[in-house]
Image 1 (cartoon, rainbow, N blue to C red):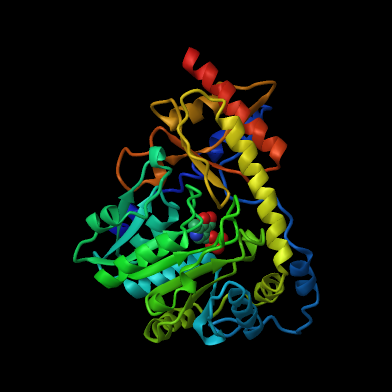
Image 2 (image 1 turned 60 degrees about the horizontal axis):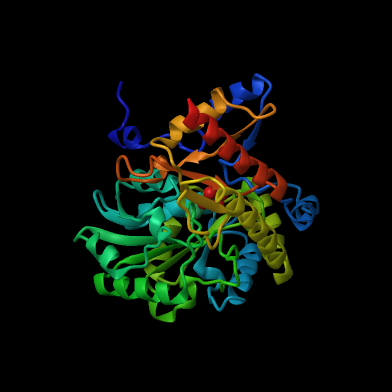
Length: 396
Ligand SMILES: Cc1ncc(COP(=O)(O)O)c(C=O)c1O
C-alpha cells in the first residue's frame, strides 16, 4: 500500500517537532521556557465564555455553511471600523484561518499553479498549497534586510506564467514585518499587471507597533475583485481553540465557488461561532490594551536579544514573533544542546529553528523564531537563557 506523493511532500511542523525532546528535559526536572509556539497566554475575553454559557438551544444544530448571521454581521461591523466594507454575503466563516487558507488554495489552484510567498513564511502554507496541488514559489528575504519583501524587482523576478496568486501575511509570522499602505499599493499594482489574486492573511491585523497604522488590503477599492482576506479570532482574541476564522472577498465568482467547499464540510462549530460574535463586538480599547502588552514584550525580547554578540535582527514592527540570525551554523543543533545538555539553575529554553519556515533548501539554518507570548519577565528570562546557552555552546 502506498501513500500519495502529495502527503509525502509535506513536512512535519517545525514548531512542534522538538516537543518530545523538551518533554524529556521536563521529565528530567528542567523548567523549559516555551518561546516556540504562537499560543498566547493572554486570557480570552469573558464575553466569549458568557455568550457560550447563555446558549440555550435544545439542540446543537448545524449552522449555515457560510456562518451564523450574528457572527457574519459582527465581522462585517468590525471590518467597517478600518474602512473595509464587506457585507454578510461576502463573508464565509471557517474553522480558523487554517481552513480559510485551504479552501482558498483549493479554489484557486490547478496542478502546478504557483503561489508567491515571501520566505521565511508561516510553515503551514506549504501544507495548504500542497494539499491543493499547487507549488510554493518563495520570494526570499534576509535578516540583514529586516525580511522586507515589498520590492517590485524581487517580486517580479519570481513571477512565471504559472503564477496565480501572491500571499501577504501582514503583520507577518514569523518575521513581524508590517506592510505600509504604500507597500500594499505597490504589491497591488504588480497583482494587476500580472493578473494575480492577493491572499491577504491579516490574522494579526491590530498587532502593529511604534504607532504604525493598522493596514489592510481590504481598504483598497481598486483591488476589490482580486483581494481575499483571511481573518481569525485565534490571535487577536486569544481564542486559538475556538477554531473560528473567515474569508472575506468581493469577487462573486470566487465566493460562489468557495461556498461549494463550505457546504461540503457542512459548517463551522455552531457554539463557537456564537462566542466569536461576542469577540468581534469588543470595543477598540481592547485592541489598544493587547497592542500595548505585546509591544512591551517585543521591546523586552529585543533588548535582551541585542545583548548576544553576533545576532542579526531588525526590530520587528508587528505580530508577536521575531526571527533572528544567530552566530551559529545550525540553530537546530543549538536547540538540541539547549534541551539536552544545558541548564541555568535548572532552567532552559525552546525556540523554533527557522529553517522549516523557508521553502528554499538550506536557507534559515542559522536563524530562529521566537514567539513572545509569555509575560515580559519570562520572555526576558527566556532570551537570557538563549544568551547563556550560546556562551556554553560556543565553549564546547
Ligand atoms: C499567519 C497565520 N495565518 C493563519 C494562521 C492560522 O491560525 P488559525 O487557524 O488558528 O486561525 C496562523 C496561526 O499561527 C498564522 O500565524
